[in-house]
Image (tube, rainbow, N blue to C red):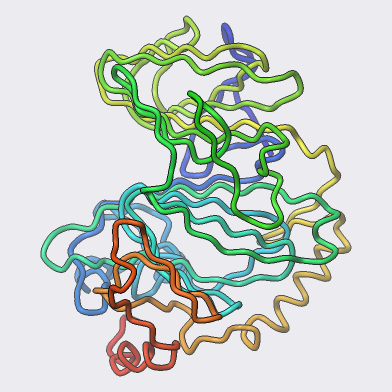
Amino acid sequence: MAFFSRKAKGPFLRTAGMTMHWDTEDPFIFVSHHEDDYPHGNKQMAPPLNEISGRSLGRDYKKTMGFRMYNGKVVPGFPMHAHWGYETVTLAQTGYVDHSDSLGNTGRFGFGDVQWVSAPGFYEHCEMYPLVNQNERNPNDITQIMIAIPSEFKKLPEFSVNTVWKENIPVIAGDGYEIQIICGSFGGKTAVSPSTVSWADGKHFVRVLRITLRPGGSVTIDGTPEGVNRNLYYVSGDTSVIMGEDVIWNTQMKIPAGKEINIANGKSDSVFWLLEGEPLGEKMSMFGPVLLDSDKEVRAAMQTIRKEEFEKWPWDLIDRVNPADSGRFLLRSSGEKELPPSVPQHSVVHEADGNENEKEHGDNRDQRHP
């Protein structure tokens, strides 16, 4: 939920500064923006040892030498962890994400792909950032947005994991701007969640746009019906004129419903995110990875996670990555393989069932960083 640190300013209802974690409003519950300049990778797709020595591996959130390891001890990222009660939307604008989950799915997406994961109930996955390039640096730019799921859908959980490949994401380009439509409608194009259970199903005015402006570029975003929560995030750039107000980058703005958003960019390339949606308006309780209706339900869920997290995990490693040459793919537990449209469907993707893949990487387990 939102905790704005500044009062109303000009055309905005509220403004606030931004960190790696963005303030949000119902139906959005959390946003993390990870931007790191990783070095070249070794054979384990991990950073060189001399660049991670002295870090608090397992919880490294301080950017050192241009990057963080997060919860990873070998490969950067987030080893096995739970999600319960919400949907996650992850855009890997730059860099790769290797994912495996408690349902038996695995894959790799990146460089413009978006993953949608709907977890009404107890679900686990790992999200690692493999440093595939061994000769050059491996920068990443990854944004993860969490959207609440209505209480009624949590009674009979229907899990879904989908990748929307970059080639299939609607893009609107104009004079000095480009807009990726992650969800919602703009410029005559529409995208909705591919999940079976989602608030972002096209019925609740959920719109997620990534807006890129070149120096001197401008764009106008249409208004929304009353009651829709709207927040604009100025992620990178310098200074722009937004709805007639000079705004510096690293600022979050709460926008009134019904108002057009006019952005006139300054002298630097700029990136904005727009998150809009009709609120669920439900009572929610959240702790850690769980979002449910009450504190009692959350406590019970956390106890379930503590008891069952490892027995629920079907893989040999909690920080599993795919082979370096895997490319982008989604391999479902059913054996169904999905590839980007630009990749021939007969292309070879390492389809080891997990144990074989662990043999390839597990032989060096003792040589991994502690």
